[in-house]
Length: 306
Length: 267
Image 1 (cartoon, rainbow over the protein chains, first blue to last red):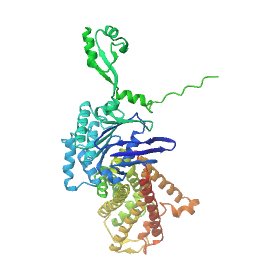
Image 2 (image 1 turned 180 degrees about the vertical axis):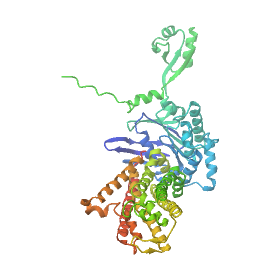
Image 3 (image 1 turned 90 degrees about the vertical axis):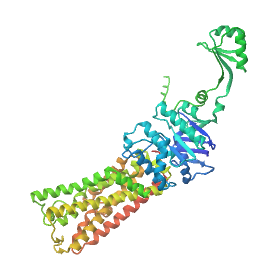
C-alpha cells in the first residue's frame, strides 16, 4: 500500500527524515511511532504530497506517487481543521464538493453516513468554533472517511478524546480495517499503537530504527514471573534457575515451561498466587532503540576550568 | 473548486461587513454635505466632491475617490492576503490539497474568488453611492470637468468605465497581496506587506525627486479615472494606468502560481 525508498527530507542543514524505507502492506494496521520531533509528521506530509522529498521516492498502491491516488486516501494530519464559522455539516459538504470523485446527488447521503460512523449523527447547526476538541477530532475523522478510502493515514487521531472516545475511535478503526481498509497510524503514544496495530515502525531523529510485526516485539524472554508469599523459600528451592528476586517479591525464573514450574513449586508446598511467561514489551524495545525526544534540551556541560 | 471558493466568500460575514463599511463612509460624507449644504471648494478635497451638491449622479465617482486612497485598497489587501495564508493558518489548506485538489486549480480558484470580491466591492460602493447621491442631491445633467454638458448615456457610460478602471487598479493590489499570501502562513503579514508597498508607492508618487520611477509605481495612475469625465476623454494616463496594472496583475499572479505549486506545505 505504501512503500518509501530512501525517503529523505532536508531543510537547509537539518535533516528531518533520513533514508527512510517504510513498507505498509494491504490490510495492515501500521503503527508509526517516534518521539516528538523525530520526523513523523514530515514523513506523513511526504506520503500525502504536501512536502516534496529532497530525495527518495514514495509509492502508493503499488505505483509511483501521483496526486490522483489521494482520492483513495483519507487523512488526518496534525489535528483537524475547519472553517470555524460554518457548521460541521456545511464543512463536510464543502470539503466533499472541493474534491473529485463525489457525485453531487449523493453528497447529502455521504455526509450523513460519515457523521453517523463517527458518532456525530445528531450534531446541530452550531458553528465548528463551538465544538469541543473531541467533536472536532471526530469531524476530522468523518472528513477523512468521505470517499470510503482504501488507506487511512492518521496522525494522532485520538488527541483530545476522553477514554470513552478513544475506545470508540479504536473500535471504528478496527471495524474499518476488518472491512478492508489499511490503517497507517502515526503517534507518539505507545499504548495507543500497541492497542491497535499489527505492525510497527519506530523512527528516531529522522531515521528508521525498528520495523516489524508487533508479535516480534513481544517475543518470550525465556523467563517466568512468579509471585508467591514465600519468595525466599521458592528461591532456595529453585537455586541456580533463579534469574532475579526483585525487592517487591517478584521472582524471575529461567524456565521454558511455566506449567512444569508451577507443578514443581506446588509439590514443594509453596503456594503460587500468579505465574506467567515474561514477554518483551514494546515499550522496552522502543526505549532501547530511541534516544531522548528532541523536545528535551539538555544543558551543554561547561568546559572544566583549566 | 471555483464554486466552493465563491461559496466560502459569500458565506463569510467578513465579506459583507467590509463592503458595508466601504459603502458607509461615502454615505456619511454625503449626509454631512446634504445637511450642512457646504461643499468643499473646487480643487480641494476628494475629486468631484465639490460638484456633488449640484448633481447626485456624480456621487458614485466621488464615492470611489473617497475610498480609493486608503479604505478600498486595505479591504482588498486584507481579503487577498488571507486567501492562501488564511487557509494555511487555520489548517484547512492541507486538507484541501489532500482531498485532493490540484494546486493550480486551487490557486486559480483563489484568484477568481479574490477578483470577484474586488469587483463586487467596487460595484456595490458605486451602486450605493448612486442611490444615496440621487436621493440626497437629485440628478441634473452632468457637467464634465471640462465645463461642457454630458448626456445621461454618456455620463452613465463614464461612470461604468470609472468602476471598471478602479476595479482593475484594485486587482493589481489583490495580485500583490495574493502573491505575498503564498509566501507566508500569516494573513496579517501578507496584507500588511501589500499595504506597505502601496504606502511606499504613495510617498514616492508625491516626491519630485522620485520622478524617474513614478511611471512604474502601482498607485501612480489610480486617480486617472477623473480624466474619464473630461470632454473629450483624456486617455493618456488611463491607458498607461490600465497597462501598468495589467503588468502588475500578470507578474504577481504568475509568481503566486509558481510559488504555490512548488512549495512545501508545512502549515
